[in-house]
Length: 486
Image 1 (cartoon, rainbow, N blue to C red):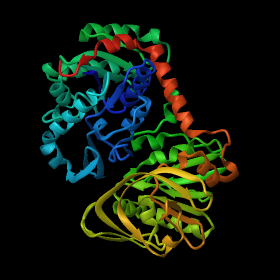
Image 2 (cartoon, helix red, strand yellow):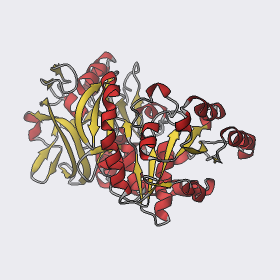
Image 3 (spheres, rainbow, N blue to C red):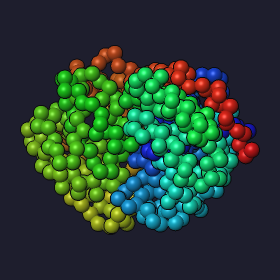
Image 4 (cartoon, rainbow, N blue to C red):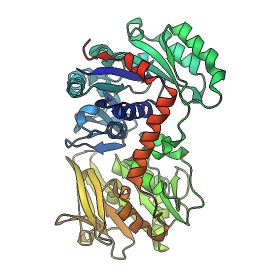
C-alpha cells in the first residue's frame, strides 16, 4: 500500500495546492508513482477527468504534475457555489444535488465512505498519496462531520504537515495558534510545520523557526521562498483574478466581465500568456473599456444569476454598445447562453424556476436540463480549420437559427453559433485557447509565434519541482509519510 502525507493550512491560500503540485512532479522525477488527493474541494474552476467526471482544477494540475491521468477519485467531493449560501454537490465527478450550506453541513458526514473509498482506490495504485486539506485547519466550528481536514485525517490515519503563509504576516501566531485551538487528538496527527511564500533574507527568520520548533515540538520545514512563476499555472480561486496584472502595452485588448459565479476561468490563461494581448478583468462597478477589441463573456456556474449581475453592473449596455461600434464578442459556455434571446430553467436547476431574457446578440435560446454534459472533445474550428482540444462541462440545450452558422464541428456535429454579421460567437468548448494553432488564428498577427502554451505549463511544473528540491528537505518530509491504514 502507498505511503501518505497530508498538507493542511493555517488559512486559505497559503499555497497548499502549489506545494502538492510541485511535490507531485518532484517525486515523479524520482521514479515514484504519486497521486494527489483532496477529499473535499470548493471551486467553480473544474476539469473533466479521464473517467468522465469532473474534479477541481487544482487536482487536475496536480495529476498532470504527477504525470498521471486525472480521475474522479482524486477529488471525490466537489462543491460548486451557485448562490451565496448554496452550492452544487458533485460526488465522484457527477452532480448529486444542489444544497444550501446549512443542509450540506448537516448531511456531509454521510459522504465519508465515498471519500475513504476514493482514497483507498488511489492508494492501491500508488507509491505515495499527497493529500491536500481545504481552508483552515483551525476552523473548530466546522470540525463536526468534517471531510476536508482532520475529520478525514483521523478516519484514514494520515499524518499532517501544517503550512503557514509568511507573506500575509502573523505566521508564527497562526501556526502556534492552530495547535492551541484544535482538539489535542487532532494536534497529535501533525508531524511537522512548513513556512511558505517567504521573501527576503531567510536568516532573518531563523529565530522564528526555532520558536516554532520549541513551541510545537515538531520539525519546521522551509522557509520556502516565493515562487513567482506560480501565476503561469491555472488558479483555483476566482479571487486571484482581480490581482493578476494587466498588460497595457498589449496591442490587442480583451475585456472580461468578472461575474460573481465565474467558472472555468483558466480558459483565459493562454490569452494572458500572450505578450501582445492585454486581458482586462472588469470588476463590479467598473465600465467595460471602450477601446476593447474583444469582449469575452466567460463560463458561469449560475447563468441566470450571473446574467442578472451583468445587467446590474450595466455591462449589458456596454456589450451592446461595443457590438454596435463594430466590436467582437465571444461567449464561452454560460457566456454563450447569455448571448442568446432567452435562458429558461423550468426545473429550477440553478435556482428558482423561471426564464430570463438574454442579450439577444445570437439567435438562439437555451433550456437548462438536469443532465450535465462532461466530455473531452476534439473539434475543428470552422473558420480556420484549426483543431481545438477542449471539453464540454455544461447543463442545457441551445437551439436556434444561429446554430446554422457553427463555431466548430465535432465530427459531423455542429458546435456553437455565430451571428449573421460574424462578430458575435458562442461555444460550449472550454480550454479552446490552449491549442497554439487555434489561438494564433483567433488573435491574428498579435499572437506570438514562439509561445507554446502546453509546453510552458510543463516547464513551469519542472521549475516548481526544482524550486522545492532546492528549498525543502524532501527526503525528510517523505520520511514523515505513513502507510495507508497504519
